[in-house]
Length: 133
Image 1: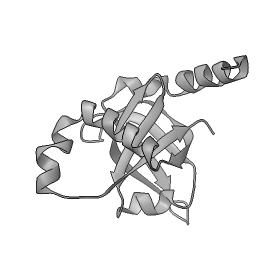
Image 2 (image 1 turned 180 degrees about the vertical axis):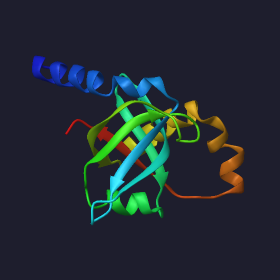
Image 3 (image 1 turned 30 degrees about the horizontal axis):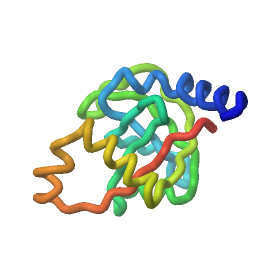
Image 4 (image 1 turned 180 degrees about the horizontal axis):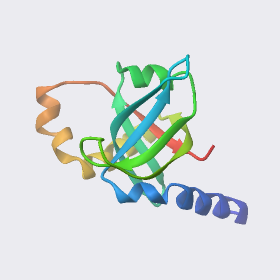
């Protein structure tokens, strides 16, 4: 790794460090007319980056397909209490091995979602990475 890659990785960790305060992420997208829509998502922050997953058929997934910037902050389990000021971020849809890796990391943090509840409520998930805008 060259020094510019290391600096970029350190800046990425520092930019999203506030997400470690909560168990979930509160992701805010914006409708075409500008109205904000917030949703609590399962997310994880580690030394490699920040990821979250949402249902593929949700309205949030539809807005994220348009590659719009989002606001993100850490929140509680219900999404009612947020920790810190929201930060703008870009999102990148993960596919293939990247999505599998993100799913494995999320499964370690949210084990019930992967096991019992997945069999009861079969859903298709899409995985996103938070990127510094």
